Image 1 (tube, helix red, strand yellow):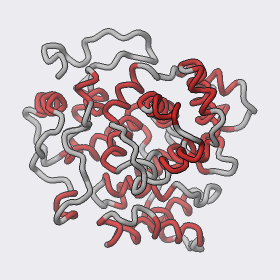
Image 2 (cartoon, helix red, strand yellow):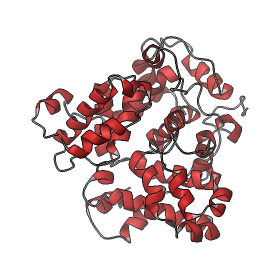
Image 3 (spheres, rainbow, N blue to C red):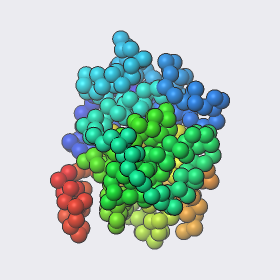
Image 4 (tube, rainbow, N blue to C red):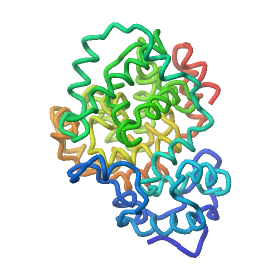
Length: 361
């Protein structure tokens, strides 16, 4: 289970933008230490951060985290993670291995500190808001079978989305935001204030620019689709011919719009989001999609067009066998995207505000 005699940060890297992972494939399979957030008794008690470290599913991850946590007061997780981000050169790699459940949200906040939003949640809620019918419908269709969303979840989600619409009036509401906000609400332990602040950081943060995934024309959405196809043509020429005939709306669009939350089980999505927080959405999202394509390569070659729509029809209905530990490994080792690739593709596309920003990556 990994080379435990070597510091995670000691291994050499190939080049600046595409480092070798600091772990082996086996260190990532089955994901983080404990990430199942469905089918629990007393959901609210167990889901919120606690003092106990749950039984590890991934012993290598558990061992690495145990080492760096020695001497830290885990009752103050935010302070611990901010300290580790400064003192541990391999902090991102630790997060990619999968943080302990009770430290995950603090890890994400530490990673996003540089994008910290100054928007006031309270002020955003005070502004008059005309409920959009589409948003109201989506709220009640979001993770509807999850325990949280049979209780207070819909009300909290509604307030977060209202605050986003008020904070970014030129953006408004777009389908897909509901799944992103819901995932943040779950990961934060139902802390809607923190969930809103994190969403605001993802919307405007320079490594994410999620604003452009949902604004008029959805330029980031279409840019990432183009980037995935471009990389796929170089990696898998025959497979690329197959997926070029499949409507992107059947599968790739769903992953991009919902950041995987619509298409995969929630415990797997948590692992995907560990990667997104470390790598940023602009690079991390297409890298993960390419990793998924690699995992499903043989299956994809056999699927008919309608199979893509069925397989990616929602996490409650699909039977995809995808382990995001494996996907993270493949994303980082085989499908890493250099900043130069992003800026070069941006230059070949029609100029707009997003493209101008991407060219500076």
